[in-house]
Length: 319
Image (cartoon, rainbow, N blue to C red; front, side, top):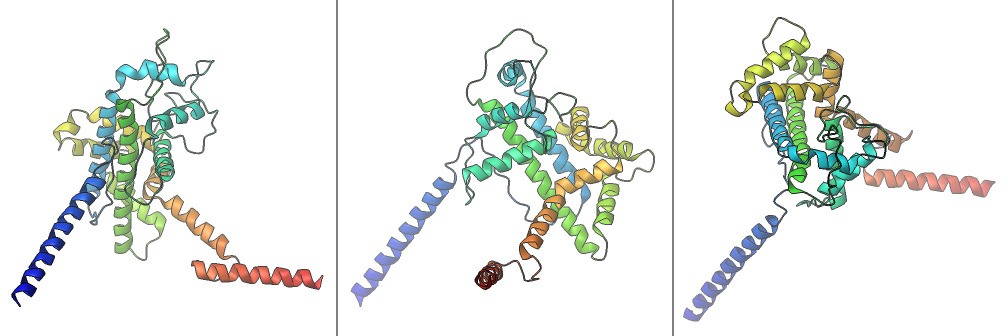
């Protein structure tokens, strides 16, 4: 009996040591990623205050601005690298440059490196207003949210031939903060949907737009919205000292037009919430279902596809 107890204790000790070793291995593996990669945790709580959403947007924009300021001295070199023979910057070359800087992206999830890179590029395109533009589209300070190159310096400077950490961090900060802001807006939208189950999508977006303006009662949409953001910036020391730069960039992030109006504000909300993507996925599912009316699960779709093949083969035989 004594030997049995000793064996049990030894086995328990082995299991404990093995568990600790395995835990340390998992921890080291998870943290062996490139330190420049910013993982964006998904929201785990419901955000019920619009000010939380707006503060996330303000802090995110301030973070992006900080990384942009850090590459100020590199702007002439960036321009020398991305300009063409006509001294113009085209979308295709610009995206090639961005990809060359962030193509080291790693992932902790089952997503492949290619998927992660595509996702980051998509967020960066959204930020700069480059979505759905052709590769020969000329990029200037007038049609982008901001430019990160200096095309006023006429002297030729050294081109950038490989990744530079400061530039990497700027692009990654855009992708990670855009994702965080999207998640926050989406979660708030879902909360509003639960509170207003009978209200149409457009009306919910209208309510959120009005909430973004705070309690301001005077002025147009842009005046009220920016005034509310300015009040929120005053509550944070870091935001307060950079208020004007933050608001100016957010304004251009929402629209490149002269003023923020209801149409472009709602469009911005839809992008942040991902409504257009949801509709596109729904449309694809509807196309996948066809006229059969079955559900979109894999089994049903396979059965429907096989049935279609059988019908076509039968028709061929009849011919």
